[in-house]
Length: 102
Image (cartoon, rainbow, N blue to C red):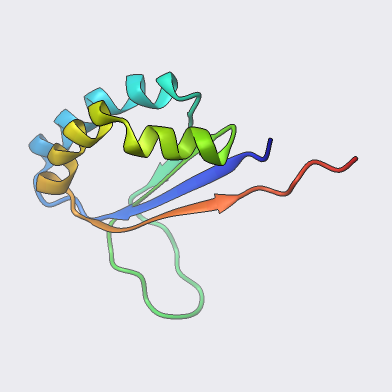
């Protein structure tokens, strides 16, 4: 299996509504084998198109299937309404880690 990383860029517009999302996020992440990596509200940009100001969140899953299972989970989709209302996504990107060497 190849580990995958999720990178979310969002702009928090309503902190109280987004907090409801945060409180429910971690149990669903763990349900799918996910691990929180980090977040940053003040990331630095060096090159290319200027990203939208906001929060960058990174978390990982043991496989692409686990990541897709998390995203498509009806419990997550219901919970994500709080994120959509409080902190709209700029992007959500899945990055695959290197394949294990034989």
